Length: 564
Image (cartoon, rainbow, N blue to C red; front, side):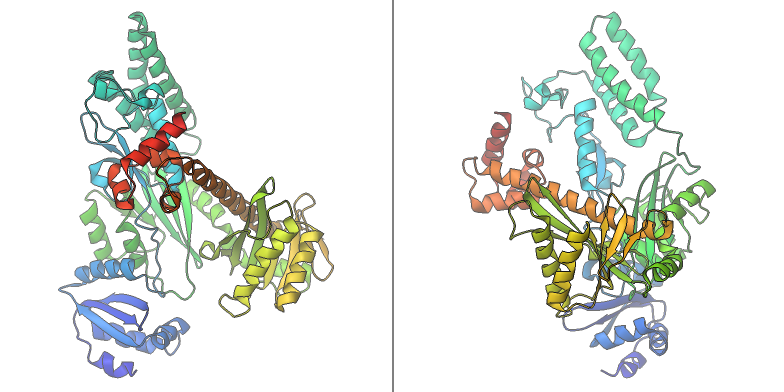
């Protein structure tokens, strides 16, 4: 395809341009002048491998004209989110990270959502769905906000009331005033702003105690205990910023640090595809199309005015900044250290191992539960940082007893079968969690598949790396090497353990569902795939169940099974 001719026909107007082929979208960009921007791409092709790959992989070039650059930005972000082009950086997680909502109702309840942030007061985001579910359960058990949605009217409360998960507003078992205090306490717990709330709760406790209402006093006392523990944990890591999302861009990754109530509550690394073209506005734009917008957005890079305009359209009081407080900056640099010491690692590796330092390392671990539910994990270190997009997990199929060596052989063989036909890149190094036995198994698989990779194992207790060429290298006193290899081993272990627990939880679901009347193989599989636990299934709303083809009767039968 002659792109020069096509580009010469491009209009000199604002809009979005799209590189694609028959099957995939390759790159999507915006421009205030489409022709000038595309000519710039064409010129950069001569010196940039990334730009050249965009043209070589594309068979079509299209554009959509807009009224202005701001409209182009909105369209670009929407198209990127929809089509996920290979050469655009994406910070998107499904349909957005989960957020906890305290609803705007007479008797508010708590919900987890990924999109309806206006339904109530929002708290989050939570980068882990399991954490959001655990906090939701904790709020029900501690503050007893209602579990029914919508709230029914009845004379006697449901089972959740007797389990201590709800205060029974549906049956008028709690006054509006007391329920409102529980709601305030739950909001204080989620936001961390509890100091003004504690005196009110203490006053209420004294009032109930003097009126001999000891059960109500005990209920509030438990809330106070939880909130006081929260206060005691504050101030240790307190920063000048009250609420902000901080994006820190280095050469290999984009890091998100979430600040709420002056505290760092979560962080996440987004690995950048080395082929991708990094455009900060585009990166954050696709992220905030489906995620909660904070009071302040802080970056270590500049943002376009059109992007700021887009953010203000979503939240009017948002502020922008590039000054990261010194104390927080130190924490950020400690978390991003693995992407900043590549040269030191390379020098130390070559000095001690007497060979070229690896750029791509795959690290493996095996986990089981008494010989059952055996799984394997693979984590990846690429160009000086963990590359989580390349992590893989394996359910071991050929071993149903305790045999780490046989399990490892299966996992490595399955990995090799993807490397040999070049479906995946050849790693420079295989690092296996274990000793000489695991090393020998790795060498056996390597030789069987004729792989050009360097095989090593890391024994945990001795912290010694055993290599295929007979070296035994203690690394505990070499912080540069230990930082990388220890991180890889621990990450592979964490990933394997997490997967093992998930598998066991899912198998429990299958086993329990086999005892429920009306649940055949098909419905059992649907429930297995869409719910992490049976608790989540019995709490699921009817609309979701209806979409999945599951009747309320089945949900009730599962609930009876769990209560029996």
